[in-house]
Amino acid sequence: MKSLKPFLIAAGAVLISTSAHAMDGDPVAGEEVFRTCSTCHNVEEERNKVGPHLINVIGRTPGTVEGFRYSRAMTEFGEGGAVWDEETIAQYLADPRGFVRGNRMAFVGLKSEEEIANVIAYLAQFSETAEEGEAAEGEAATE
Ligand code: HEC
Image 1: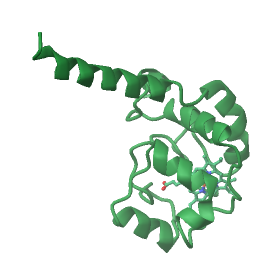
Image 2: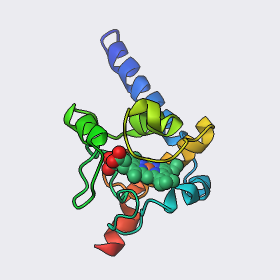
Image 3: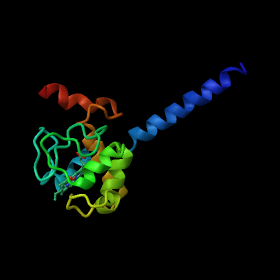
């Protein structure tokens, strides 16, 4: 019995961390928030607007969408080994200018943590690499 204990603790930790993720944001509310992004970002087709499309943005190396002319700052951010995940996107959206100094996204940022979590949950639906299970739904239909 004694030897089972570390295993149970580890299993518990996994459970806690996955459920914390699932609770992160509400993708339906996030769709509303995304309206402020959609003037500049596509998430339904791989077409760039003022900003790069955001399909599969979760797991993406910053500054790597083909055919989009990024700022030097964004390209260098990616070359430095950064990856867009829930955490880095949240930090970027809270303070776009401060988080990637010199980048070109002309957006003041989102004030509320809830809005940030929700919009990331929405983006996750269009990212195959997102941790949320149902993420790739839309993808299968279009490819
Ligand atoms: C006024 C236009 C504009 C708005 C509004 C805007 N963005 Fe951007 N976004 C950009 C541009 C331009 C870039 C590229 C920046 C660069 O190259 O320095 C960018 C880059 C990004 C990136 C990095 C993508 C990559 O391929 O590295 C993410 C993630 C992102 N935006 C998310 C959002 C989200 C989410 C919102 C809404 C909450 C938003 N943006 C609102 C213009 C905008």
